[in-house]
Length: 501
Image (cartoon, rainbow, N blue to C red; front, side, top):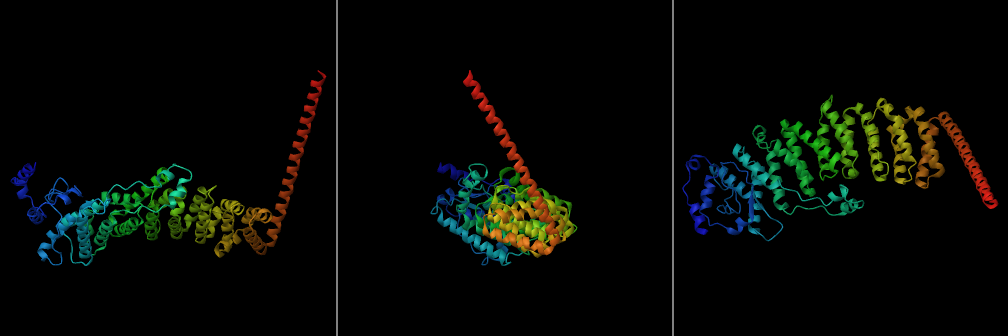
């Protein structure tokens, strides 16, 4: 077997091999003079998607390119740096198994040192403008390292119907941390430095950071490792800012991730990070706002309130929603009605979040938009006031601490007072929590000081309604009593007939 390998290695190159230029010609020649390392070859895999102009990848079936230290880029002559740079990219394309810490420790450390050198070289600007073929190989090296199958999420079973109490237990677990992070972090840092570099020409780089790359990059946001998601967020934001040609595609791709999360899986680790990116994107929207952006609000952002796990990303979602209303005040009615559509019925913690978001939206809502939605809005607020969960009731009463909301209520008090008065009276009469009772009394007093005549009218109407309700209850009880008496007499008559027979 050994002799067969030797014979294959000593075969004469074909004409195509001789005539075709290779950026790795010097590295291949240098590597062929080194003794092969079977240990390194057996534990290393490299991306196989190289072009024909690239030397063969380092795999277990091709041990002719062992990983060996190379000269430093700073010490190499300028004319040799491109070739040396590409040879170092080959070393960094090797993907190691980190399940065994001791396995290939030397090769792992050599790759880490090489990545550190490349990061420093690109960051310092010593590389200048990389030739197009080096940019291609750089992106291929990055792809070989970061694009991989993510491990299954520990919360997937709970969030897709695997158990009632499993979701809470899964939230308490520590997040999965990527074992290969010592290498991945440096690969992400190198990509970031390449993207933000002033020497990177977007007209050339967009050939390699293309739609396919962006889609695979977005898939990585489902990683359980928060460190990786933080890097992904930063890099995607930079790509969006620099590659203007990709902006519509990135927005559409994020849209599709949201659709799948809302209507299919309800499980994704990176929704919060994607919303953070969108927050800054929305902030930069030009006015008048495009119809595409309004549809994104209605079809994606507002329905994101539906999933049970909304608490994990609600802060970022609330910021995006508020940004839309600040940009275009006419969207306030659409947003508030959308919020009411997805208002939780039995999830009290979710209700508290919704009330907080509602306050932020109302702070930037103008009077005309407020009037369009105030009736269904305050009917819902009235139900929250009477909630048996004290945090929901308390959070709803805190709305009256906001001066802008109080001014909107005062301008439309003739409509809002009759809706809310009954809920306030019920709280004062029967709510179990003393804090809620005290806050309700303060709000009631505020209404009285705002318009005493209207307050007295609402009080009179409430008393009449209560009297009618009490009279109706008495009639109902009397009717039931009569039925019970008739049934008792019929039963007695039946017993008498049985005894006579």
